[in-house]
Image (tube, rainbow, N blue to C red; front, side):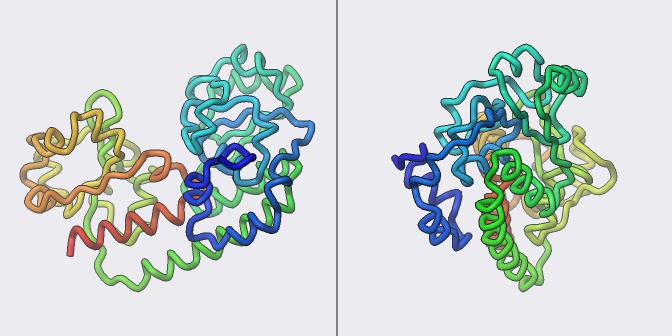
Length: 294
């Protein structure tokens, strides 16, 4: 365990592929311990990851329930799910600043927090690389770590460029469907979703273009979409009872993916978080999707 609260493994996961280990060395472990005056509540796993990467976790007094990585974030005070917040829960932590995305809410709760004199910074969530850049810059500004944020973003931009080059070199664009199955009836991702953006970033084609957002899909529509590969989160597969139970769902039986049992599952916050691990998530999704459909 490093003195900044991250295990060696967690820091390697956060920095893998960034060329950022020299950055860590340059900043130094002692710099990561320094804490400014701001008491910060982070709403969103990606923003929390940025807090840790910038060494600002000493200022972090609370997080939402999507903040699962690094492991140290699990031990922070929790304010609930980022879309279902309460003003009382947030204000009880006496924050100077609350950092989230435009997906956080309800809006009336955030208005109450502002009225109490707390700075609220919301990053526009639009499932782009610009969103990741805005998250890094916003946390750096709020935490008073602009220099660290600039250095981190340079490393992330280099990694993103390398991943884009890798994806562009592939000529196959397999048809994919993302299935959301964390709870309730499984749904599939249409346009305008984080999953749709990930599919495209990874060099695949979203087989669902007839609607935006998430909807249940009938067996007939699934067969018509003809996905070559199915995507899910590891949490979603667990919620369905595991891989074997997943493939027993009747609506999957008529798809090309079923014949190959072509399934790619990744941890949800890594896959859909749109944070500093996004280049690594895209690289892994691209590599696995290409391999399983070859």
